[in-house]
Image 1 (tube, rainbow over the protein chains, first blue to last red):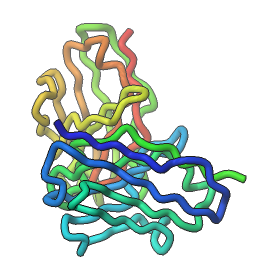
Image 2 (image 1 turned 120 degrees about the vertical axis):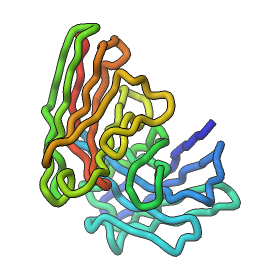
Image 3 (image 1 turned 90 degrees about the vertical axis):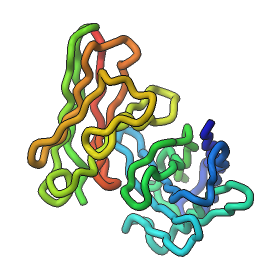
Image 4 (image 1 turned 135 degrees about the vertical axis):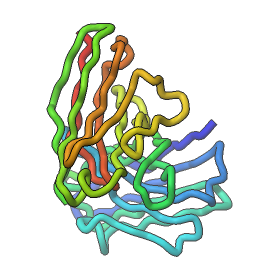
Length: 120
Length: 105
């Protein structure tokens, strides 16, 4: 059974940092593109970043370029999102998701999410 | 890219059918057959219900169907059941709609 479990969310002040983790199990993790999607309160989801199996391909939504870094540890089945210089606009539930087919940005399994709140 | 446009709410009685629309532009919905739909129950992980406009992942009931005409994609749920009550989001290559709250009356 495919399982994705996020952790690392919390309350952080503007300008601060958070590192989100996603523990994956039940599939050959290293063979899949993986993605972070976020959903701010009252809004639709927003694709944030994705990464291919060997970490050579990393892509970001414009609003987080230069501030967020996606990475993975295939040996441990872990996906990460390092978030720096956070602003209130980054407040959201962050989901990790598995890409169904390469770069189609279709996500066949999601975690339940972890909430990141940026507030003073 | 701008978010895709969905009606905020939809409703129908058990056993009836309901269609949720998703409107984009010729640069997203209209240009690709990469429209997908997700179901979200409160407190649960989103679930993929449809991809590439008309393809159902394994385990999704055939009561769910997808279509597209021009810049508008649609998700139709036939034979509505109480468990179908949820938020539904469309997406085209990572750009999402604002969501439609489906109520089963």
